[in-house]
Amino acid sequence: MKPSTRVITVVATALIVLLAYGWLTTRDLERLPEVTFTLIDGNRLSPAALRDRPLLVTFWATTCRSCRKEIPHLIELYNEYREQGLELIAVAMAYDPPTHVVEFSRQNKLPYRVAFDLDGALARAFGDVSMTPTTFVIARDGRVVHRKVGAFDAQAIHTLLAQLVSESPQP
Image 1 (cartoon, helix red, strand yellow):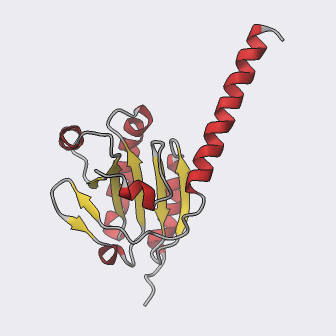
Image 2 (tube, rainbow, N blue to C red):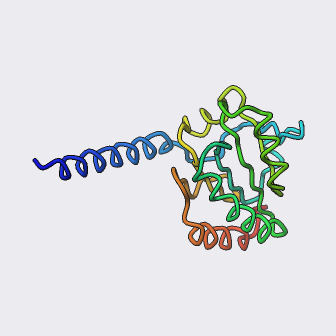
């Protein structure tokens, strides 16, 4: 086998393993877990506060390049749909120092909620999230309707959120 073919084979195999790992680690989550988010401002956000609202939860890190590239899209989505009930929570991974998360959020003027996951409990509750970014879209009834390990397709998320915010809350 030529060296260039060998490199391509190794890279392709690595990508397949990473994609399979990402799919396997989040495949069992069907509903929003009963978790409380501890926000960087010290407030707590309970599952009851999220009922009847479409929700986007993204696991991220300040050192993750793909996460940083998604931020303008997240800001745009949040600004467009927050008046229609969208809640967006960016969960900082446990390994991300809280001071970095707070400073990054402040410097970048993140308009949506940012939460700490100091002990990794949120990542575990969402199906053992270990790769960033990992994004979940949750319908008003608590169903996980979309999950993505790696950078998301902004247009696809936009379309999905437009549909979710237009649905009436269930009585």
